[in-house]
Every structure is written in structure tokens, then in C-alpha cells.
Amino acid sequence: MHSQAIDFHPPAEEAAAFLLPVTTTLFADRAERFEALASEHSLSDWLRFLATLSRAQQQALKALPPLALPSADSLRQARTHGMPPLDPSVRPAAWRDALHQIASTLRLEAPEATRTELDALLVVSDAALEKLADSLMSGEPEATDIARLPFVAAALQVVFTQLASQLDAGQLQALDAHNVCPCCGSPAVASVVRLGAAINNLRYLHCSLCNTEWNVARAVCTTCNSDKAVALHEVEGSQGAVRAETCDSCKGYLKIAYQEKDPRVDPVADDLATLALDMLVDEAGYQRSGPNLLLIGAYSG
Amino acid sequence: MNMNRRQFFKVCSAGLSGSSIALMGFSPTAAQAEVRTFKLARATETRNICPYCSVSCGVLIYSTGDKSKNSQSAIIHIEGDPDNPVNRGTLCPKGAGLRDMIQSANRLKWPEVREAGTNEWKRISWMEAFERIAKHMKADRDANFMAQNKDGVTVNRWTTTGFLASSAAPNEAGYLTVKTIRALGMTSIDTQARI
Image: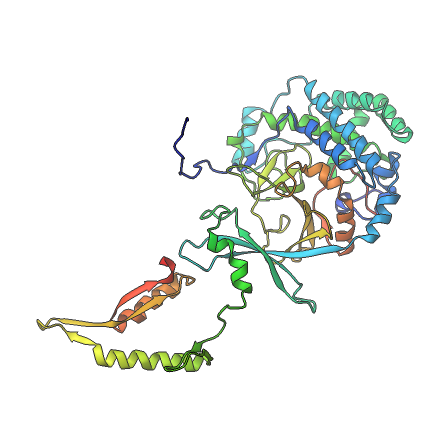
């Protein structure tokens, strides 16, 4: 029988501080997760449509032309001053092609109301599209654009995910503000506690725009950095795979998903499949600290 | 009205009706109705250090109960702290059983004494315990303290009593322990951390 000596040395590999998006599978995996979450869900039609949207994102990503990263000078300058290397207000023009591709793929499967919006997105001028993207990125969009913005966001996610994946993880650095993405400076959509060898049980924040993940210590508020009053809330009787990490120091919250409880969790899809948790935590007086760009305008008043 | 940045992040029940879900042609009514049947469960999450040995592994402690309200606090789960560079989320079997130690019915919570000739443990006050220990130490030291050895060299040693220090002490307490015990001339000093 073939035998092998057991290696008793602990892994020397340090846990990665940054996990760049894996462009070959990211949106396809997300689509699969949306599908799985959609069954027997009170928002199943919507989640199933978002699965289709994620699949369209994967196709658009695959069809992207080569994108140029910022110049070496600009990367160096960002590094020197502790800024993220990508600037979401500087968008490669390819995002509009991605949007057109996503819109034409989806229009056949979309409900009537959505089809009207998608058709409008396919014909409006480039300048109008840029204006939509600007208002989305500013976080202060017009109420009349609400139904179009998830698609604008989806296309921007495609190009910025591609750009982030081209960065050198060794050149990234943790920013002073640990609640924004070290690649593009966008707020996080949620945390995910990962499984793996070196990264086991570590918490990573997941970027709402470019899908980069970065490590932040657990049991610490991701908004105000205090560890004095962190609590976890879950819907009673749930499996506990998604919880809301609340902080009584700043009254903020962000969701946290545990791969240990369900290895297939996706920070974006599982976030949208657990809106009941948001509603309850919101009623309890906590304010969400990061957006999910596929759901716009879920506030009232 | 345009939304501001805070509203941009917000997700609330009333908001779903005007959100992209509804405007894209999907009905949020079932989700809004269902949430009224749900309740929140809450646990606080804190970081601490295992009290057993000198390795000082980091632990994450989860407990129920809200100090501000009239509710009973209880520790429901303890696990290794993955962010701690010492143990990287792992725990030894003793550390993994920490919750059972904390909640054990047999846990020693106050000084007890078993008097000579009895088989009963009796609860005593901390002051009485300190006094009795001090008296035992003084009697033994007075009887056995050696100022000089048989060659007349000054040694100032007390070898008949030993001291076992706590493993849960920080550096400062460890420093004071050694200073105090050595000042008495005691030579046998060890710590629970090695047990």
C-alpha cells in the first residue's frame, strides 16, 4: 500500500487580505444561487429574474473588449496617498455596450413594466446613460429612474469586476476607512465569513460594485470600528446563514453571511433573499451601511 | 423627491412598494405580509482570551440577553477567534469545552475549606481564606526559613512551601507575583500555565 508521511507543520501561508473577483465564474455562480434561493420564496419571480440578470452579466463580462487599467503613474499616486486604484466615476465606455447587451438579452424574459424600461435604455443617448450612472454612483438618484438603475448597476458591476480582476493583489493596501473597497472605494454590500485553508472563518467585506473582497476582523462594527456593542440578529427559526451585524455604538448594520452554515452563500444574492431581516432590523432602529445595487429605492418617505 | 445617500442604502417594509422590485413589475406584497409573522433573535458577539494556559488563545463569545433590558444573560457559544494571530481560530479540547466550564454546576466560585478530621467542604469568606493561608505560610516560614547554609553562606531561602501562580494573569500581575514570592525567600514557584 502506498503510504505518505503526514505533514505536521501548520500551513505557512498567510491568509489573503484581499480576494479579487474570479471573472470566469462569479456571475454564473450568483445566477445559480439566485435560482436556488428563488424556490419557495415570497419574491421568487423577482429572484428568478435576477438569476437571468446575473447570467446576462456573465455573458456581457465574457464579451468585454480588453479594458485598460489606470496608468502606472496614477496607480502609484493612488498607492502613495492611500487611495483605491480604481475610480468609479471614470468609467470605460465599454460599460454602455455591456448595458446594451444585458438589456437586449433580458427584454424577452422581462415583465411588461421592465421591458419598457429596457427598451428605453436601448435607445437613450450615451450622455443620458452617463448621467444615469453618475446619479447612481452619487447615491442620490432621481426617483423616476428607480426601475432602470438596477440594470445600469449591473453593467457597471461587469466592467468594474473585470477591471478589479486585472489588478495586482500584491499592490493593494488596506485603506484607512475599512468599510470601503480597497479597489474602487465603493461601500460594501455585505460581509461573508469564508471557508478555506488559510482564510477559514475569516470575515471578508464584499464590494457592492466590483465584487472585490477584503478582510476585516470579526466582532467589530464595519461602520464605526467599535467592538463594544456588536450584536448579531437573525430571523427566528432561520438556519443562521445570513445575520445582521448591528452596532449599538453607531446604530448601523450590515448583513453577514456564513459559508460554514451554507457553503453556497453569495453576499449579493443572499442579501436580496433575506429582505425580511432588513425590514425587522430597520424597525429595530438600525441603519443599513451599504447598498445592494440590484435593489434601488426600498426606502419610504 | 430624490433620495439621499442614507435612503439609498435603506430597506424597509413600506419602501418595497415604491422600490425597483415593484416598478420592474414584481409584487412585493407577499414579502411585506410575511415579515409580520417573523421575529428577530439576537446574540451579542465579543472577543476574549481563554483563561486556561499561557498560550492565551483568542475566543469569540456569543451570549443572549440585553443588559439594558430585564433579561437573563447566558453564554450560548464559544469558538476560536480566527483573527487572533496566536491560535488562528483553533482551540485545544479544553478550550473547546470552555462553555461547559463556565456553566458547570461544579464550578468553584468562592473559597472553601475542608477542616482536618472532616470530609465536608465548607464555604468561607475571602478575608478568612486570606487570613488562614497567611497564618499557615507564616508558621511554616518561621519554622523552616534558612538564613545561612551549613558553610555560613547567606542564602535566605524558604524551601518547604511552593507557590502555583494563575495562568490568567497579565504580565504586570506575573511581575508582582514573582517579586512578592521571592521577597519571602520562596524557591519553588510555578504557574498553572504549564499544567
